[in-house]
Image (cartoon, rainbow, N blue to C red):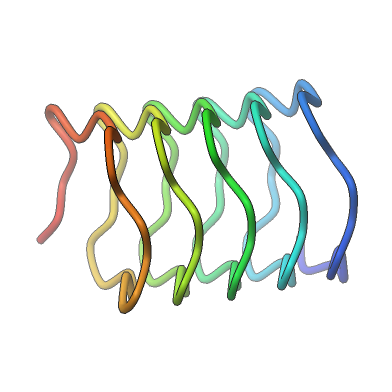
Length: 101
């Protein structure tokens, strides 16, 4: 479901299994959010704040995470095939089992 959440404040929201494919989340504050198992295919997270977010098992294929802050994020088992991670900060992020294909 495509929607515009640019600059939204969703700190620590529970969005487990959310269907946000092709959503616009540019500059959104998603610190500590639970997006585990979420469908985020083609979503745009330019300069989004995802520090400490739970993105385990999320489908982020073809997502745009340019300059996103993913410090300490859990991306274990996530599908990142085709995702753009240019300039993204992945310090301390858990990428175990993630598909970077």
